[in-house]
Length: 262
Image 1 (cartoon, rainbow, N blue to C red):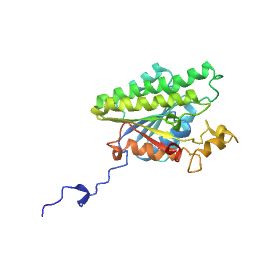
Image 2: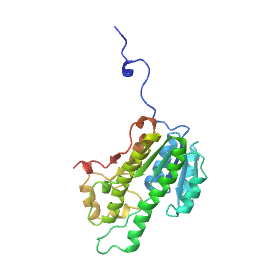
Image 3: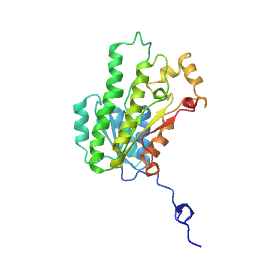
């Protein structure tokens, strides 16, 4: 009888690694909320983490907390809507393995009354800045022939939402952008994915989530019956960045308590 060629039947372990040892990760919007939590999680998985935000004090405090655990992190203050500053930041890097393209913002309100300034802010930060950050990261990864880009989508990138038309549109943009560049860069050994959180309780969203009308409506859409916390996003981000996700590209992992399953 010949020995099976199925590696799952052999004696050697075949579980791929979920570790990120020796990898360098950059996280935008790392000063608080999802970005902060994921920066810590990536560091705990073994990556050297570069934390990026406009507010130097916030990211330096997080970087110091990471270093206090014996892990590797540094903080770089940068406004991602400043294209020249973004290009200078990435131009200073000799290597980049993981990008968490997280920085973003939202202004809710009826379409007929939303201000032009609010529209410009969301388009500039959620769309244009996300493209330029990805573009600069991918320049480095293209030279290396390897890397992982993880964009931040949302349940609003899958479904429409009254009073959130522009924000929802920006997250639909991220969905299309993720798929398109995933296909473009797959032959180069580079993966591009997204994560799609539900309503996550962060400093940016807390007021809306605790509003008796808005919060109650949002919660009613989540079959698991609770809002997310920033730590709920870490596992998916670390997984997608790791060798365990080696054949995953061009898709969004929804972290939504069942919202988009309905």
